[in-house]
Length: 353
Image (tube, rainbow, N blue to C red; front, side, top):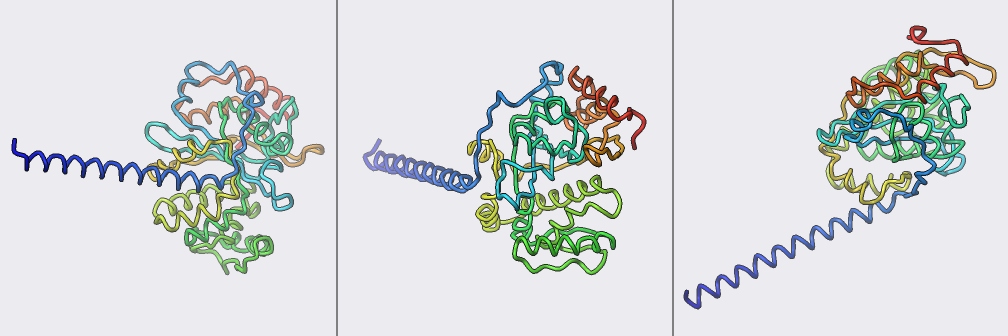
């Protein structure tokens, strides 16, 4: 081989090595940039010893759930304290992400659901977060619903205003009644956030700004009460996810800078980055509200509550919906809670709607 050929080979190797080193540096820089961004999120580790999981869930159901990343989502109206570690959770959602297909199922748990919030105390389930923070709220979901959740994301629900505005609004179709009810909510949210938005003049399809979208998601009247309210919340969240998936990097960067400070989670930075890198492949599919079969009643000590009719059958439907688990059988804990709810309220399967 000639000296010239050897020289060319050496040069080619050096060029390839240089390109490889540059790529490594770019990847390291991108990772460092992402880590810096995600550091804005308040990471609060949870004591897993304080999180209850029913130990008699069938092995088959446990194995099925292991194929999913299940995360509890809590939305707090924390304007009075500015803290995300205390307060009643106005929004309670369960997100189940299929590890293989990246399909996401979303279930809203009605905040007034009559469940065991801990220690055999049956009341509105949103009291669990107020009593013991995320650990007790997750335990409430696990023990009543036979779940194995250990991760949560908590946000100030009013941060939806910043998100929607940065995304350029979200398109929603509203009724005349909803437009009317939005007036008071818009006024209240304007006062909290310093915005100057106005409610839509009537029903129709609008590109709602942040204040309007937040007001729409908070409506609790006009038929359907909390059931319809959670539908609106899921509709707004779904529209935001769809809009974010179509956004450019500049918009997403602004979104991160503005909103991540309003988030608290026990997920590590590595976990968050892992989820973030997959967000564009996530497919947000069906959504639902829990309990599926229910009724409402008002009691002196606990107020107006949503009663599952009954808990066991509703949890069975939940596992079929979230995980496609057709062989699921309620654990003894769920069955005992179900029996106690029937004993306390008199409502059983077949009494709901």
